[in-house]
Length: 320
Image (tube, rainbow, N blue to C red; front, side, top):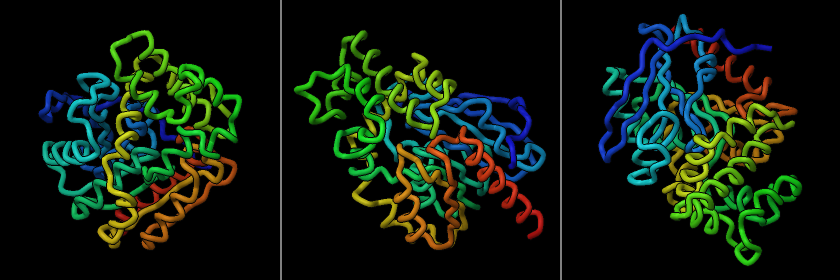
């Protein structure tokens, strides 16, 4: 099984002013002459971590990581103002242009797959290859599966679900997303943080097939929990700022782009049918269903598949 590449340090980082009072944290590592690749983190709201650099051979890839608007080290933290999918797509172009990159590999998981598809369908001429994990199409029923009690993930995890319900009065359980959004955007700081912790704990507990303490700790860290919960509620109450089935309906725009779709068989956050539908709409992509795995990129077999994908593409580029 392939393992993560050894830990590396950044070459440098900077803040890019993208307008609308947002400054993005951007870092570069690996080799400056290598294959450019941009890493798209999940959430929306989670931010990049140092181990995300380790999916790529640093002797052959020019690795770009950035924290999306309101996330991680970007400023202002947890801001919802001027924060939509299309703002993020435009930000990616600003980063690419600033770094003088003509084309790059787009690598993203979960919400990062959503953003990667939205970007590729908008700027297909800028994408060398797509490596996507844990596909999230952000359709209303994809959101309802995980956040509303509609015969979805709540039936798989009733013990965890009760903690997700806890901050919300029973009278509001019919629309959990609305109830959480009101608290996460309200003026009551205590209620806001209580809601953020409960929302993010639900995600952290269900991300792996077998829950990992490190995943739960990451999601429930106060800084991360606030941005994850606020941004996810903001994006999802607006259906990801996407038209119905937009990512599938526009898949013809990426028909000529090669790609890999990697998805855990037992992904309970983003069920496998989303990856299956994407591959049908995008035949040039290779779908890999990873057995005995859940959603998270920290699942060892998913990590292995992702690293094999970056290596296959790297070797293919060298041979071409």
